[in-house]
Length: 383
Image (tube, rainbow, N blue to C red):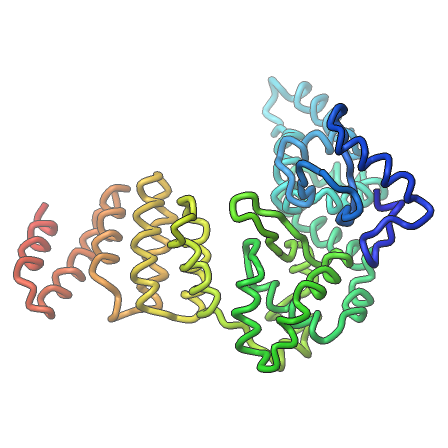
């Protein structure tokens, strides 16, 4: 549909108004299934039942797309190689499926990035074939090449120059979030950096402009019945926020992002009565509180997340949360964190590490004159 649209306003050009009328009538009648694809939001056509963001596609669709691109010929060459080496000591190459898995992970399931990689393959197919044994390094190398091509293709610096100062501020703030957020998350940040409220007044227009330039994506949440916004991972890589070559250096120099406020936002979302349980928002809250060094919230959320992941048999991830809490909180670490850390270490067979943390709990209880806790600690150490 983008070939019929004016990208600046997401509207169909006047000469194609008849197409809009026909498609709208078909959608309204509902007798025939119709699939529309467009780079931009299709605001002219009403009665669209479902909108899917193809920038975050499932692996199965990503796999199907790979089968039709030029580099799918790797599949045949790998099959021939592995068949010849089936009964030999020569190391087999990674399967095409494994290569696609790594591409999906590296490019975040982004169709456009995949097409850029395919263009690289057309010119460097022999080189890619020769280095197929070193898959991880290959993908890291070509991921960087893909970013370079995207930078040239999107004329990234020129795109940024098209933005107003307020739009740059909006992009800067949004780039700090790792999951899609609604306008409330942005409003909370604007209240800190913008006393005149001009950012908040023009927020929707600024977000639409960023979306029209492919700098952010918009995802409609059926659960919360609102639009969520996020900066794609590849655009984040080009922005280089927090690095010396940051594209938004003028914004970064004059404005800060409140990780404490961001943590409060996700913390509130998690405890919203209408919210269906998931650890995603709580994990995001933890990450922001970790950066703001909020010891109270880290103790509270850390033990909860560590317990959940340990129960799901992701013990190492559970330990990671415990260690992050201890790293920041130090002497203010809650005894429940030490207790859970000791339990996880014991469960995975690392008894020396477990004993070390049980001794910390004993010391903690002795300092608090917690006689019941001392008895429990001594029992745990002797067990």
